[in-house]
Length: 199
Image (cartoon, rainbow, N blue to C red):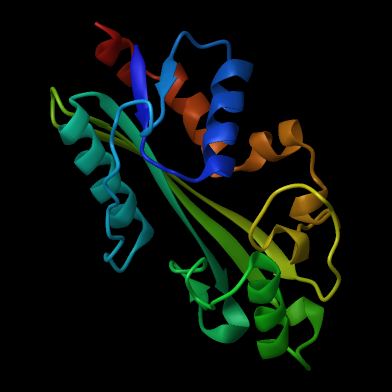
């Protein structure tokens, strides 16, 4: 079965391909570029689920292929949920610039009070049946002043997990075991939906 990846983010594309390969699935992943799709979808919903569903449905209907999309956000309790669902567009500049802006806003707040979570939603849409399959997951952490690790992207270098490791310190296989992408894809492949859609 072919699945269209509804993203132009190279980091996400690499991660999705790695996860499917590690699970020994016979899914053939197709990028938007390979499908000849240049359209962007405006993520204008006020929650992660609706944004992910909008993207998956748009690309699925356009290509007539089963389409996979996801959306993530970073929610910091001390900042009333900021950066939120628009974490990537929350502050202009590079990923490091956004990390530094977040640390600036958290200045003077003890680390133990900087509780936060990565919220993640994975959505797969079947244009033939008009069905959505969704998976949601929150990954709890605190925001650290210290940048650590050379893996990952976004806020990963300052996202400190309960075990003391920063998300950017995790190697691919470790990250895939706890991320919404890794957990969601594994669940999708293991449940009945996959078997139904393969026919």
